[in-house]
Length: 286
Image (cartoon, rainbow, N blue to C red; front, top):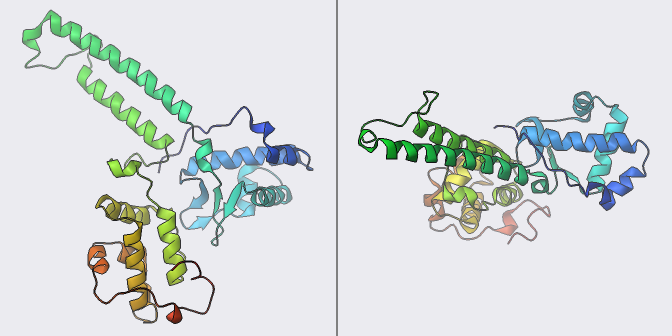
């Protein structure tokens, strides 16, 4: 996934109550530098605010101390402070994510890029129009070429593609992902995977590209959260206590090509809470 080239820092940043409290702490300057470095690292990772070495390996305190070139005790103090203040979240697998990551997306930068590209495309179109007026009979069979010998139509297409790629990167989407209306929808990846983890006792992550791709495919087919919930409940009831089958309580199986058949499975009913493990992980889910 491409990295985000810019992050947004508000000029009001130092008026935030949390930042003011940090400024009163020992090593406050170093802690604030670590905060900015975390934001930058989240932009490089470009995974909806998550920060990790790769999709299977989270950063440890020691790794971050090395990457940020700051003393390990101060890095640990900074991370603990950020977590207590709700500035970062750390999941059960030790993956760090920036809370409210959308605040730091560079929407203004994206707008500037779009305006520059729009102006450039406008100039190309004007040049093409002028050439068409000068020799309209030749334009039916040949493309319009600019003075530097490049095809104007191709340049227009390239600029439009570049604009789209930049917009996708700044909005947190991979530039090679398929473009569709549903990409702009609010697909609840985390809600779906959290539900699966709680019901089936698994530890899948909503940020894994393959998992997101499976959910997105079903979402594009018109299925919504209640459908994912029903499939999870039906197959968990059927497979959870069957040793040779419970390994298939995974996104690859549940959200794959058999999703609709699972959804319409007869006799699925609702999940039997009495058959669930004796923990509180099922409370509030039914």
